Structures are given as structure tokens and as C-alpha cells.
Image (cartoon, rainbow, N blue to C red):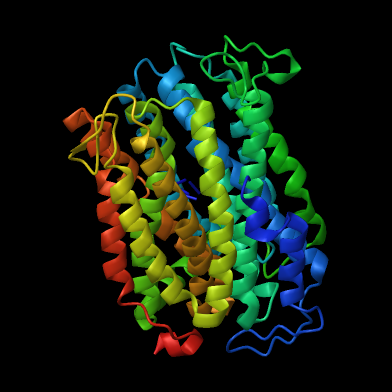
Length: 492
């Protein structure tokens, strides 16, 4: 979640889009191949890439989402806290530290990587490099055994995979304005995000029905984990790493085959120096684009908050409500299903009203849902209303909160991506997405570390998640300074 994210997270998949093919067809039809690309302030009148390129670009969201859905939010994170760590409170502290350190690394390096890509031209080599990190880091999670004495290296593998997926996303996001005319970018972004949610749900359904075992050692279908995996050693749940790695390797491949890459601008030698100069120019240029600067600041806060919820929503349910991995997985299916619907509807709302109103409305929903979600425990709901032993009301309220976060989060993420495209300098688009990654990660350690610190000080998982709600409120305030204008209008 991160996030980053992206919780970033289907029983409701068909409601979200009919089917993954129907969704992609709708996105492809929304951007006819005969249309011409005309970037703001440029005379680039190249034909828009065809249906295969747009399909392949959207499939990257499908490929990458399981790291957020399975690893960060609904399977590996809760498993680490409840089974690998010696106790849930200590596990939440360790998990928060790992997510925070990964966010710090991304914040430091992402803008430079984006600027280097703009200086050299092609983006696919960078995507390939970070894809290798993703696959390696995810695969190594298989070795996270219950109660292991030294879990630190497993968390290091998790951080490697996290850096890989986030950096690969920086470069694929930068391809977006080259795939559609400006008026269709929002819709394509929304449909891609929705397809990613569907991918997360499909992969989660596979994990729950075939692999991940509950406390009784059986899957959601009541059967032993597939392939003869040892339920006592939690091998079914530990398969989340290899499954995530293979899923990405298979479904990210079309991006390399069908999406056109940018032309080479300069040699690889000296790319770091040129990248630093490009980055400096992009940062200095923010003085002439105050709306863009405010947007980056606002998104820095509210995306960190959303990633904090994604990272700790399942962890909170495991510790405070006593949910099993299978229960958390069902919660994940619900959240991701409505997330797909939210992203799809958000893309249409973006095309109709513009991205800024969509972002603002969804942030209010996220604030309310987070406050309600952390208000529940086995003893009370809404913080102070007591419930009887064995009551299902806390579970119901947490399910509803998760559904609202999923729907609003999907729409917000897709609209935020479009809002950046509308305001950024087309000549420095990858650098802009590098700054966007910086904005998403510069304080990405803040939410996890705040959660870890407040959890440690209060000895309460419930109190530990409250900072996430406060960050949503701060993001709403900062977004009020962002203009609806695009291109050079925003520069003025």
C-alpha cells in the first residue's frame, strides 16, 4: 500500500468492468488509433500508438499490483506480523521500519533516475533493471519461516522488491502522455488503474483458494495447500513471494514487446551528470509552476497516508481484530473489487470534470473511512461505544471502511496521475514523474515510522494508526492551493 502505496489493492471484478478484456477494449476504444498526439506547447503530431500498445501499458498495472495487494497489504505483511515476528506489536514496529526505509531510498533516488532517463531517452532499459530487482526481492520472501530467528534479511528482500516495483512504475507512468491525446489521458489512466485492481484481486483469489492456509491449515476452499505444500510450515502463505514474482514476469512482458520507447537523446556515458542537471532544472522550474509545486506537496502527504493505510490495514486487522490471513484476504478482495470500480468511475469522472475535483472528493472519503476504520476493536466501535464479546459489528464496520478506502483510493490514484500529466512540462515528463515519486516517497517513511513510534509509545495498535487520518486532513488543505489549469496556464 506505500502504495505506495500503492494498499497500493474479484468477487466484484465483473461489476468493476465486466471483464478485463472489456475494460481494456473500452480504454482502447476511447483513444482511436487514427488520433494524433499533440502535446501541450509542442508540434508533435505523431500518430497515437495502437490498441496493442495501450493494452500492454495497462497490463503493467495488472502485473505490478500484486506486490501491493499480496505482499504489502493482505498476505505477506499480516503474515510477517502475526507469524514471523515474535509478537504482533514488535512485528508492526519492524514492518513499519522496513516500509519506511524503502520509502526513504525511493525518495532519494527516484528523481535522479527519472532525470537520467529524460537525458538519455529510452525508458525500457530502466524498467528492465528494476523489474529484475522486483522479481528477485519477491522470490526471496519464500524463505520467511514462522518464528525465524533472523527476519532482518527477509525484510531487506522485501525492500529490494519494493524499490523495484516503485522505480519501474516511475518509468512506465512517464510513457502515459505518449500513448493518448491529452483529452484522453485521464480515461486511459483510470482504466489502467482499474485493470491493476482487477489483477490484484485475481492474484489474491488464487492465493486464498489454492495456497494460503488459515489457522486450521486449510485454504478458503477447505482444502490443503496445493502442490503438497506443508501447511504447518506455512508454505502455502509463503508462496506469495514466488507467485508475485512469476505473475509480474509474465504480465509485464507485453510492455517490452508492444509499447514504443522514447528515442535516444544522448549517450549513457555521463548520464548521471546530465541527469543531475535535468533534475536541478526541474526543481528550479517549480518556482515558475507554483500550482505544480503545491500539487507535489499535497500528493506527498495524502499518498503517504494512503500507503500507510494499505501497509497497516491488514496488519491492524490481524492484531486488533484477530483476523486470519484468509479473513484478511477476503477483506482484500472486497477492497480491491470496489477499488476497480472506483478507478473506472474515477477515470470517467476525470474525463468529465477534470482530475482535481476527483482527487479532492476522494480525499474526504478517505479521511472519514480511516477514522471509522481505526475506531473499531473487539471491545468497542467508534472508539467509545462498547460491543459484546463475539460481536460481528467491529468486523462489519472494518469491512465497510476498507471498501470505501478501496473505492476512493483507486479513483484518487488514477486522477492524481492525470493531474500531474496536465501540469508537468512535456519535455521533462519522466523527471516530473521522478519528482512525483519523490513526492510520494520523500515522507513515505513518515506514516510507517509515525505508526511505529505511536504504537511503541501507546502500546496500542489502534492509537498507532491515527496519524494516517491526520495526514489525509493535511493533504486536503494543501490541495486547495492547486489550480485546475493545464500546461502553460498552470505555469502562469
